[in-house]
Length: 306
Image 1 (tube, rainbow, N blue to C red):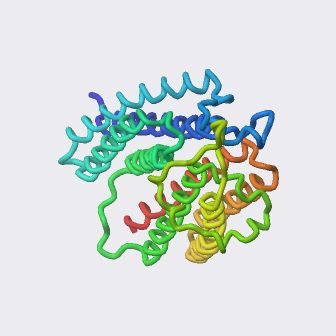
Image 2 (image 1 turned 120 degrees about the vertical axis):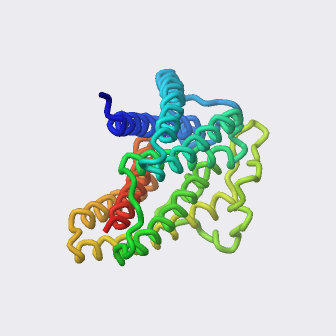
Image 3 (image 1 turned 90 degrees about the vertical axis):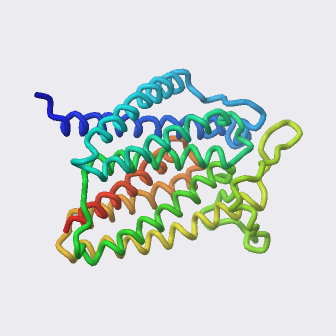
């Protein structure tokens, strides 16, 4: 007799690995298409505004399409199995339906992916992909009914999740607005605060282009870039404190893992600026942000069960 839970768990894990691959490939396509890693850097940065994507490798695009096609079927299977098992694990149905909704959202928004002058599209793709990763990981961890008195540290972990999510959104807006090169120095942008613009945080605006079609950085990009840097400092301080608290509360493995991933993230962020945005480091910066998110989701899951 087939073990329904084992089939469900295996399918969820397979879909999670596919989603992780898709997120990395999407980051590669988005960032290389923006000009990162091109021979005439930084002159080619933002060249996709002219309809030119020099580094979208054929194998990357093909692999991405195959992975997304397979994942569409596996998500439908997950939703069907979760609905069949709704009386055994009712919590799985909520996550599975949310997963199905995000899949439909990404399929719809994919129609506008070619329009790189709309930051909302790139941001929606990034956040939708990360959201699916989180939902799949949460399904993989299993059903966790809320205990009457969960760990007192859970509230701190939830706050860490919120702060990290805001930082990831800011990072997504930096990428979507081609703001990565707007402050090329580790010391930041001179005089950016006097020209800071609240419009920078509106993802629905349309990016402007020069007569040749290439991207023109301005006050919006500098505002986003520096906001991402300053909020990174806040997130680092809070998560470092949380890691120390975990270590002191006899959760040493979790505390050390959180601090190690956090330190790596800061090092990758500094390295991307210091070495003029090499493609590999920027992709790793994206990947490690997702890893940090999964660490906090896992901590929240275990603390709900305590």
